[in-house]
Amino acid sequence: DAVQCKTAFGGHVYLLYSIDHGETWVKFGSYIVHNYRLPHFTAVEEELPPGGFSNQTMFMWDQPYFEDKRDYWALDDIVIFHRFEGNWREGEKYLTTKEAVLDDIQRAQCCFETELCESDPSLLTKEDCQDVHGWDGTNHYILRGADAYVIIASLLALTKFLYNFTILMLTNGDVVIDKFIKKYMPRACRKKKSNALFDFQQRPDEEPPPGMLAEGAFQCVVHPQFRRFVAIVFAFPWVVSFIWMFSVTNGYQVYQPFVSFKNEATPEESTYMDRPPYVEPDNEMDVSSGFVVFLCMSMDFANIFWLSKHIFCLWPGWVPEVSIDTNPRNNWLKVGKQKIILTDVKDLQRFSKRFCQYVCLLYILGGMPWCSITMIMKGQWLKYEKARLAEGMVGFIACFRAFFGANVFVKFHFASEYILTLNNDLRDDMGLSMRVEKVRYLAFYCFATISISVGLIISTYYYHSKLHSFLVSVICGAMGAVYGVALGLFQGLPTFPQFFFTRWPAEGHSVQYDKKIHCPCIFYCAYCSDMHTRVGYLVLFLDNMQSYQELLKGDQGGEMFGDEGL
Image (cartoon, rainbow, N blue to C red; front, side):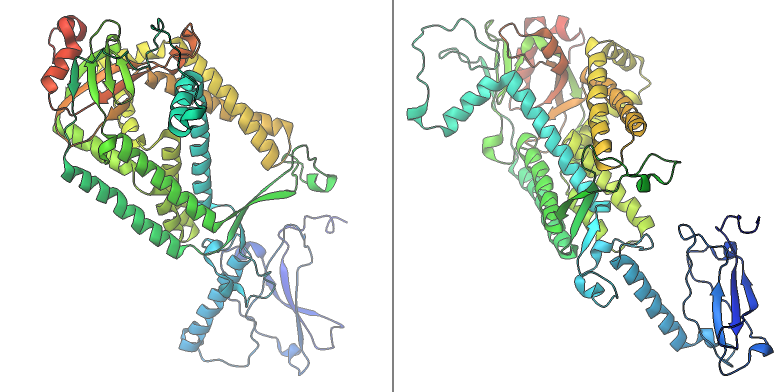
């Protein structure tokens, strides 16, 4: 009939009693389930009617309309008594027992990794869960929170390394291989040099012939006190955060379930038709907490090492040798192993001491142990609402740094100056950079790469639905196209700075130039070169800045850099 066909979800719950061993039941309490849909238990009191007074009274709670997939409710702390004092809920014994029971419930919810666990379940030890009935004795939790951010950051860093290594081998592979052979291969196994008297084809990344010395050689100004200061600023937070992270991280396993490729949904798994068919994961990827800690330590140290070597030059051997060779055959500015063709130099600009201090601070922020701080935030027993916010903010910084490098804050500052500027000249520069053909190519390549990659990941790690995978891959590909446009835009602007902080920050001059990367083929393919060419921003602190500027300007200083000069 109509009553039996009603939806069971939301049926009332009734309290009944029986005095004849369950033969007949009498209702004396009724509860509307909507009034009790709360995140906590609700105290309910009922007075037994006189007809239920006996020494064999039985009680029953019943929900006639019940759906096992959607209805769930619980009873706890059932007490049958004749008389209590009026303020029994305020007694010390009751409050102590209530707090202990709530703690036990919360501990059990975390041991079983339920959604009602208010903190990260991986913070529990085996001793915390060994007395929980039904616990299987393993600390095995799904990948989430700080662990997920660290692993995502490490995957981004690995992807970036493989991409940069591929580009390096394609554009300068022969030089890299020659240096590797000279450094690691025994002399007897090396290829013998040619006896040719002349080399008519000299690439821009090769050393000048013997006897042709640079006209201007300079030394970087080095302040030992500044080196010690930077070393302490980097080392102290890294050591403290590692010890703190190690002390708050227990031994556990995190896993990410995934579906084997070409797996199909069974009819039982496709019950709900309002969403794509769900495929039960049939495999999982396990990672130990010790490995996550190792990733944190390694990634933080790698960024500190990169800044120490390429920005602050803390080791004497890392200080670059600077020279300018105006010989028509060379005509370059050499900074360490990098050579800048003087005709590619676009501008010389002066900057203030305060600007230099601000950039130095941004570099130091990039070297902070963000991955370790993410794990430390996890170990503070924050509730999920606060943990999601705290771990998410720090984890986002760690992922952002893994993708854009240790100088991410400096890049962001230089890029934001163009995005937020109201200066018409700077906006004109942005417009000219946007019109370069490589912007369209980068947008297309990023769209294709990300859409295909995301489509494969969605199809493999979650559930199979051609429409769902296609839509998600297209949306992510569109976001990748936006990233490609932004990348092409900023590559045409001086937003990729290269500072050499060998002394305390001070006022100085910057060099803007076209940082060109040549294709390895003999014809120097213009397409590959243009795709990887960007505007560089170089800052050096030298012992003779006046001669350095004069050699850069040459005889055409007024025409090249403007009549106002410096």
